Length: 471
Image (tube, rainbow, N blue to C red; front, side, top):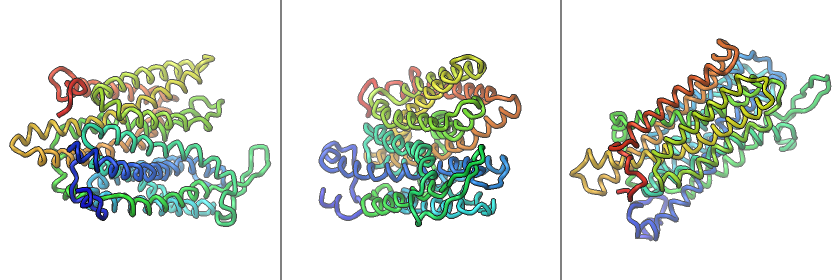
């Protein structure tokens, strides 16, 4: 069997639930695919978020765009990325995980190179900038297909850990962008290959050079290398093949829609606050320069996600999700207190610390909600296909779990757009972020109620999760 499995790129037999198969052959192959997937996903998040950092520097570089135009440039990657995720959710079973991961990673070269050339000329038309912003959505779309692909490789008992590592370390791309881009745009990192700098006039009348293009060019060689490694190093699973029609059954599953709500509360909060946090801090505490620290929030969230996937496997994703929402509500309550008392000596550190806790809780919830999906679907399939063989049930559960994982990620990604818009509307209507924060609080209460009533209360589908060995 090992010779057949390791021959070529297509795994013609794959049964990770068979402990002998898994321990002798499966784990090594699955881990290889996981560790090739992680850097590809990190780069996808980097390209998705790079535009928000670059846009913040456009006025300083001499681009004459209005604040409204800049806002839309920041928001457009969220719209396109979330929409692409819907389609990407179903692509792995159609095209194969290796092919799709390699090709979609290579597609990141288009916005990365395009941005690098466009920002070197202050006369670049706005429509070109808007198109590049939309193309950055390629990075957002990749998440759904990446998570769908990795879910096929692991047994139920390890899916939470695997998805937590893939998503958590992939989410680090947000922190990488916010940390690296400000550094590379200030230096001539690529020499003559990087092009000419733009001259920036400081407030005191002095001038300096800005290589804004480096913020995108810095990722180009890594994208190319990752795409090549994925093409030659990853695998396709033969029995993971399925048409869109085969996967469309998830739209009839109520759990698909419930998990969309929960993942909007966890991942949606992570990606939305990551995009909005720098501007939120600038508007709330205009006298404090925190731009060098905002990367800490996404970093904390990504590491929490990577670490709590395994915890969710052990004690139950439903329970972890429940307590994650409680922690998010407490952190949001603290943030509301400090923003309502801006004159307090601890207003800024308190507000910043509250958001760091909030980011941590979103990371924990990101891991636990994804761990819930395959466990839920395994039990749903047991009930809806009582006469099927165990192998047929496993195939159907894996197929639906992968599709739901991708689809929930697609819906949650719209928060990239919705959360910044909520803060903007709150600021216009009330002069501060409080209205938006209260709106998020109400939404978290709804998520908490869904988690308890539908999944972990006595008699619910995940009530025994973590208390006995999963079937």
